[in-house]
Image (cartoon, rainbow, N blue to C red; front, side):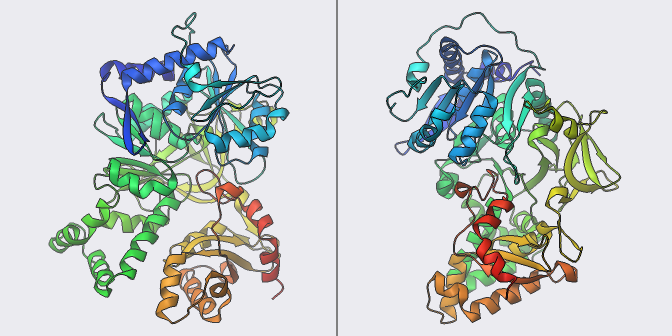
Length: 573
């Protein structure tokens, strides 16, 4: 494996110069960028950044939607020894300001009107920023102290200056955690961190030049960046960028990917859509799917069911998925088994921003439902006495940017990173996650509650879209629940409840329906873990309101603040 990330991609370009590397939909057509064209753009971007004064060690921010410009800015920055600072597109202006100021970004690449507006709202509070490069948006007048440039203008510089010698232990990126609590921390990741994780991941889950990926998770998140960008490009595979999460279903059918990198929330939405579709059609369709799911895998009847039912479901996801990789949060076991039954192989893995990110993953020959797989080669996993998962390997970050105290808490003197997650390893070496230490809630009666246990159970119901459990410092467990509104509306119509959302939320029949479904979903939980009261919400938790991380995990403190009135009401009833 090469000594730096640009070299790994350039090596693939030598083998596949005329092969499409990246695809972007423009005016209704998927437009390719070949490997040869990509490397030329990277070199020109590097030269343009060098002209703007970027030197080895300087930070370049990328606040942009997924697309070729993101890739070019990323590798172009690294080519001249710069350090890339991705900024999550879901961040509020204040969080954007914090990340750019804390890292000392001097040049910022921004795409689109929406992200430019967020930048302009805080640009006067960024003392280090000198240049903003704009992609797919016209440049406004330059504010004091900052010069605006068009992306095309940056790529006009034909030649680089003196080549920069990049080593494996040089910082490549400062990735700010999208954590569920507190301000983000800047994780310093080196070229060697990424390269070691790429090599280990490829040995566990091979990617081939013939593969095509559909990228829709934010490239600012390290899972999509390593597994969905560095790994496939280094192997000569092709990446198509979804237009938006809203067009994912349409883009899947158009691109017909062989690999999809995703998070549990997306599979939950796919599952909900499947059941809504069969439930809203003729009665026999739901009966047929239920019958098909009961057939023993690979039996004669299953093969018949596969041709008649499952193949049609797979075709709605493009029909060519060789595998899907799921990370970022825990995948509900019944959901994983459902997709496996219909012929969609989900390989669940586990990792952190601080580990570049993959620690473990299920593989095609070795899988265990409920586990997050086997540790990658070269990654050592140890379970501490208090059940915390500790990790050591070349994929471990240098630490947190300008925060030596937090770094000392993160990595101990033996080089083990303390994940904050609790778990165990079974007799065959498979890793299981049982909870996150910081997310444990303690009731006023001293009972420990792991919220994800109840949340995953409740989210498995076809009527439930999202759940957040509340218990800390409270006498009992309550929950905020977002229904799958299309399915609830269908059920309501069947029962003669002709109402809008606001009316359905408080209707006794609906509340009794959800009460029964929650009780059935949590029947195996201990008495102190049972949800005693709940509130139905008319709108989903959204990343745009800072209620979700970029990988769609709950930001509990934000949601509790936004729904303080509803939560307090559940404890006054």
